[in-house]
Length: 159
Image 1 (cartoon, rainbow, N blue to C red):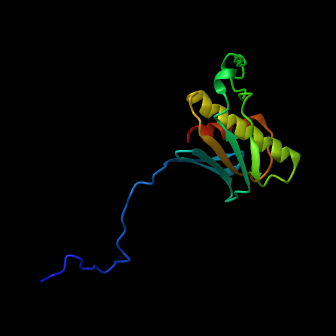
Image 2 (image 1 turned 60 degrees about the horizontal axis):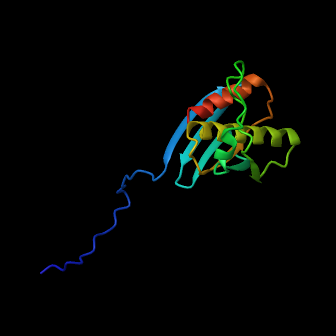
Image 3 (image 1 turned 90 degrees about the horizontal axis):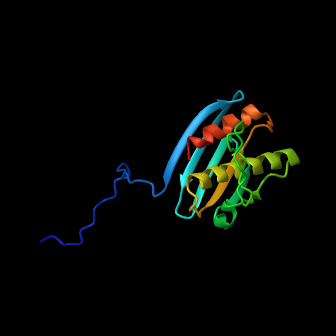
């Protein structure tokens, strides 16, 4: 008579596919001559976005989105026609968590990217309360307007 608790041998080649518990999106493009990959992960308490160039990931910044957005809604800056309303929201405060000790230009650019991405998330969903965690691995500091818009367009594909 067989026992109800018979053990089966574990097959190391048996792979069980299960959906990852977090929604993910990924995009890649060449931004100012540099291959750039963007990945976003939407966890229940955080939104993680990574911008990677040439396999680098050297700086982490977080931006709380739960700051009292409603108190600033009436004070929002009007969107100008030329800029298309791309000014970041003033209540978002990025904080560098790891890395970013290179140059003040690199730190400023990273905080600009973080604030702009957080603003895009908050504009899409004003009730969003998760924290944005941005991982950056920029090959070089590029302050050109065209590069900024190309990068934000690439990130927007993943939001």
